[in-house]
Image (tube, rainbow, N blue to C red):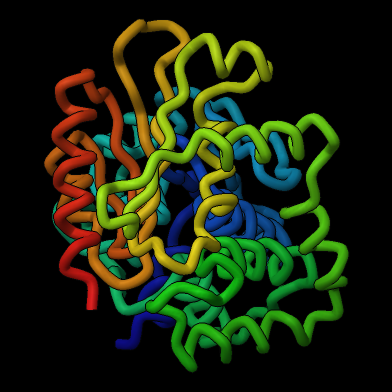
Length: 316
């Protein structure tokens, strides 16, 4: 049985389906979640379908998540998207469900769930879902296609990452056939207000470079975040602002926790070398060219910067 048929079999057998994504969600996390949610509701209106998660994605405009009881989750088929390990699921109750399906494109470091559909050669979970759902007889709507396209577009940094393949572009083209406005979607995902533009300019001015200048990073304090009225997750979403420097192989943004002085979370990006192995040593994870870390002490911060500088130094 192929993966599309297996997924369809599990969906058709379930009366209740709960859908999850990772903490600090990006557009691939929420795009895959709400795209799948739309597809399920449009094709099986009689089923109870819920999208769960406590944190919000600050890029673009996404629906609110649902609130459901523990008992509802226990009776459900749980589909966990874009999440490599259980610690990063943005609702720990997912693992109490009657059955759990993991669909992801990150390396399968923690193979949780009853059924796993993990394809780490894919650039985005939205790319995987596009292929899976296209392999069924049930149509993909314009709204679903728009969600999936947003996830692919952002997780590939507008098709610039090294894991962007012919298959990635083929799936994006298939979605583009659903007649949503690609220019409008790009504006909603990437346009900035004046205050956001001012912060982006500040971020660029705050970049520190390694000695050989192929690794760059920004460390933002509580005071700096407060002065721009930003949460740490919102500030880290600006990481692409420093990703266009041709000399950089690795770049990062670290933000101090608003609630805890001296503790930092971070976003890591690279062009060629892997950064997820470094992230995994510092309470995080992700995929080769884009990962996140959390709960860094100031000592951790010094260590991870040194390790990433070494990584940048071995770039081809």
